[in-house]
Length: 290
Length: 296
Image 1 (tube, chains in turn red, cyan):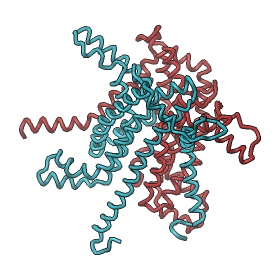
Image 2 (image 1 turned 180 degrees about the horizontal axis):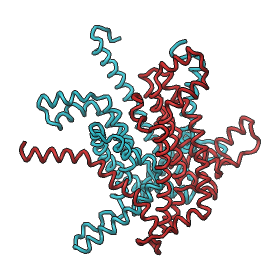
Image 3 (image 1 turned 135 degrees about the vertical axis):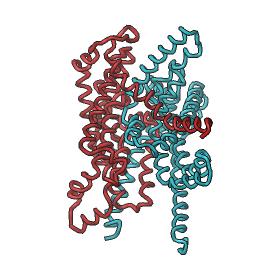
Image 4 (image 1 turned 90 degrees about the horizontal axis):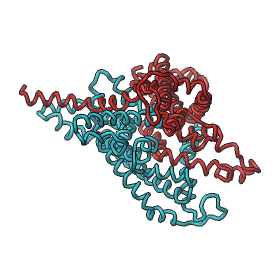
C-alpha cells in the first residue's frame, strides 16, 4: 500500500467518526459539564470556579422544588393521556392496516409536528380562552351557558398543551414498538377467544414495553423541560424545570441554571437506566430479534 | 373474519385516527381562519381579507428576521445532512451500535431550554478560553469564534436536527443492500464511486426528505436559537417577542399561518411524492420478483 492510499484510508476512517466527535464535543460535553458549573460560585454577572452546593440548596429548599414536583405530576398526567389516546392508534395501524400502507398512515402525524412548536402553543390561546373556539363550540352546542374560565392559565391548559404537542411521539414510538408484536399473534388470540383487554394486558404491553417506555420518557422529560408551555398556557404559578433554568439565566444566576440542567440530565439518565434494566431498551432498535 | 376485522369498527377506528390528526391540527387551522378575518380574533362578523398578509411584507424587521432565519436554516441543512449521512454509514459498520445511537438520539430527550442553557454557558466559557488564547498569542481571529452569534446558533440547531435527519436517512438506508456496494468495489469502483453511483441514487428520496425536515425544524426552532443567537433576530424570536409584548395581533396570526402553510405544503408534497414513488418502486419490484406475472 502506498503512503498516499494509507493516508486516504486513515482519513476516510476519521471522516466517519466526525459526527460522533461533533456530538461528543457540543452535546455530551456541555451536558456533563453542567454538573461542574452547578457547583461554581456565582458572581455579579457570571460565575467563578469553586465548590458550593448553594444552587442545589437554593433549588431543593425553595418553592422551586414544589413547582418542579408539580410539573412532574402534570407531565405524568399528559403521558397517561397521550398513551390512552395515541397508543391504540399505533396498535390499529400495525394490526389492521395493510403493511404497505402503514408508514403512510403514520406520516400523517408528522404534519402537526412540522408546524413550529411556538405557533402551536400560541395558537392554543385563542382556542382555549374565554371567547375562544372551545367555549364558543360548547356554548353553541348548549353544553354550557357561561364560558369556562378554568382552562387557560391553569395546570389544565399546560396539560392540554403537552398532550397536543407531544402526542405524535407516542404514535411514532408505539408504531416502532409494535414491530415486536407479529400479526399472527393477534390471529392466535382471536382464535382462542381472548378479549381486547387481555390482548393488551398479556400480549401487546409486555412485548411493546421498551417502545412505550421510550415514548413516555420523551413526553415526560419534555413536559418538565419545555418552558414555553407553562409560560404561555399556565398561570402565574405554573413553572417547570425549563422555565426555572431560563429565568435563572435571565437573572444571571448561571450556577442555578446549570444545577437545574444537571438535575434534569440526572432525571433523564435515571429514567433511561430504570427502563433499560426493566425492558432492555436496545430492543427498540432490533425488535424482531427480541 | 376479514383482515380488517369488523368493517364498522374498522371504519370507526379510521375515523378516530383522522379525528386525532384534526385535533392536533385544529389550533393551527383556527389561527389560519382568524388570519383571514378583517375584524380579527373574537369579532362578531367575519369579513374575509388578505390585508394582514400584505402587512407582513412591509414589515422591515420581519423581513430581516426572515432572511436571517433562512440563512441559518440553509446552513444547518448543509452541515446536518452530510454529518447525518456519515453517522448513518458509521452506524451500519460499527460494533458500538448502542453507544452510537444513544449519542445521536439523546438530544431528542433533552428539552430545548435545558440544552440551550447548557450550550449557552458552554459557549461563553469556550469564548473565554479562545479570547484568552487569542490575547496571549496575539491571534485576533480566534477571539470571536464562539462569541454568541450565527456560529453558536448554528451549532445548537445542528445538535437539534441531527437525530431527526439521522433517523430518516438510517431508515432509507435500511432498504439498501450492502452487497451492491461490495459488488461495485469488486468491479474496481472506489468507495466514493460506489457511494455516489450506486448507493446515493437509491437513498436520495430519504436524503431529500431529511433536507426538508432539517430546514423546517431549524426555521421553526425558537428556544435554542433565542438563547444562542446573540445580536440578530429570527422569525420565531420576533414572533414570540411581539406576542409576549403586544399580545396576538392580526399580523401575528397572519405570520403564523403563512409559515405553517409553507411547512405543511412542503411536507405534504414530500409525503405525496414519497407515496407515489414507493408505489412505483413496489410495482417494479413485484414485476422483477415475478417475471412471468402481469403488471396489473
